[in-house]
Length: 155
Image (cartoon, rainbow, N blue to C red):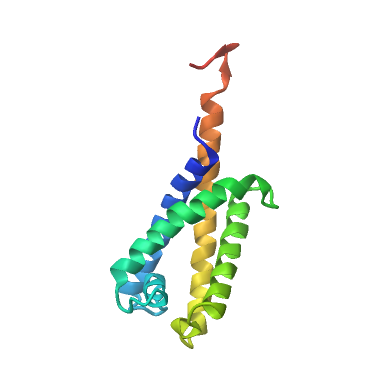
């Protein structure tokens, strides 16, 4: 039996990889129309221009921090579907991140481009949808594995 935290970590990894594809499209195809999130993370930590560090922190925080928290909080989130639970969670994470940037970090990291804030919100919403969907599939898969077949356990 897989714990909720472990399911959350797996879902967090898949969701982070999905968002990484969007960020890569932003960086390479859109010519950084929006300030790249890994670049912002690196700047906030005093490593301007170090995209590798930003990518690593982005992958770690999306997978282990947000994924674990979602696994713990998912049953308590106030919606019916796992995707909407993921959206609520991810938008909450976006709000916490914005408050952290404005009150603790350097708000200049975001620049004067309000479209970047919108891009970050959209990517967090996509993150939440993928996170919730993958988490729900893992939960359902585990329920099916433990289902009774013909009055006998499946295993």
